[in-house]
Structures are given as C-alpha cells and as structure tokens.
Length: 273
Ligand SMILES: [Zn+2]
Image (cartoon, rainbow, N blue to C red; front, side, top):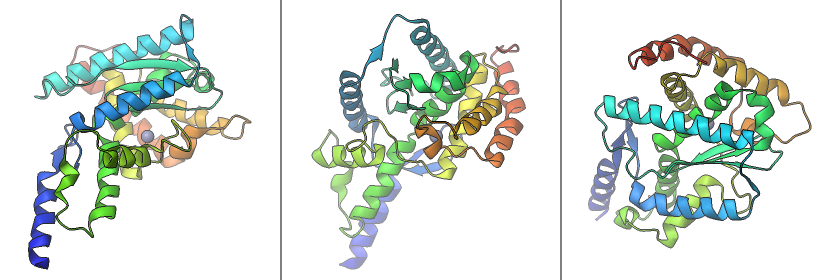
C-alpha cells in the first residue's frame, strides 16, 4: 500500500512542476493562476478598502507611470521569448497608500501596492522601478505559489496521494494556505520572507524588466544602499526585514546591470533614465 502512495505522491509532484520562463528551471507549483488569482484579487480589494489610497497626486501618478512601463516591458519580454499569453489572466493595478512603513509588494496577478514611506528612499522613477521590478518579478515567476506548494507539501506529505491539492477554485484550504504564504491575517500586507534563491532570482529578473522599460539598472545597487542606510531610522522598514541588503546582494546587483542593459538593447532601448 505504502508503495502505491509513494507513487501517487511522485505523480502529483511531477504533474505539479512548471517551468520558470526566465531561468528555464522546473519549479514545484500545485497552484494554477485560475486557483490563486481570485483569492489574491479579493485580498487586494480588502486591503485597499481598509487603507487610505492616494489618488490624483504627483506621487500616485509616478507609481502608475512606472508600473505601466514595467508591465509593457514584461509583455515585450514574454512575447519575444515564446510565452505569448503568459500575462492574459493578469489584472495589473498600481496603488499608493498613505502609510509611513517602508514597504511595497505585488500580489499574484499583478496587484501592486506602494507605501508612501518608501518614496523618499526611491527618490526618482528609476528607484521606484527597482523596487517595483523586483516585486513584480516575484509575482511573474510564481514565487508565492511555490512557497504555498512547499508549505502544502510539508502539511500534506503525510497524507500521501492527497490529490485534492490540485483542485481548482478558491477552496477554504487554498485560501488558508494563501494567507499563510502571504502572511495575510494578523498583519495584512506584510509579506513573509522569500528564500534567498527567490530573492536573487527576483533581483536578476527585476533588473532586466526595468532596463527594457528604459530605467537605468545601475540604480538598483544605489537604491538598496540607500535602503540599508535608512535602516537605522525611526520608520519601520518592513521591506528590509524581508530583503536584507548586505554587501554581497548589492555587489551582485551591480555586476548584473551591464547584462540587463545589453538585453534591453535587443528591444531597441539604448538610453536609460
Ligand atoms: Zn523580494
């Protein structure tokens, strides 16, 4: 009996792999967009309804402007690399909320929030693009869904062959795992840390997207240095708790910038702001 259960688990794992379009690597993912996005969209609306969303200011316009350029760049990249339709289910939104926390995030399906507290550190459009590009990258390659899958695997591996994991629709179980994976509940909108691998991956993808959008990828190292320097301040720095900006991370960002610029040139982008 045990043997069959093991085979069943193995089959579920094999069927549950998806390819990361940027790295070509196979990743564990039990959760389809169709399953996750409705939950993410509902949680996003809930968040906006309970926070002060800023409209009609220059800062709010900046978030919209940078967001639309990055989205366009991501579309260009997917279309040029054989992934037409990859973003079809995305419903991009770029909102600024009045909150002193140094934070920003992107939920699955392209639901972005910037907090006003992070803007002084971003300083300019390229700085906003660094942060947003990184957060979008987590969403584009389903890092959250991978984390959900890993936690589901931990919880359910004992119940070998629990193929209900792949069921579609926002079941109570899915919502529960989603909330755990995104830290929603006790602290709404505060994301749990991704693994170091996911962080490095999001850095690299974010740089490429921002460069294709015409933003200078060399700003990334400077942005995270500013973030580091700010960590001694009085404002809570949520994003630093999940994005430790050590010297090796900053050096890595610096070393990847030329390749990001070279990739952008394939799209006719040769000058950067
Ligand atoms: Zn990150």
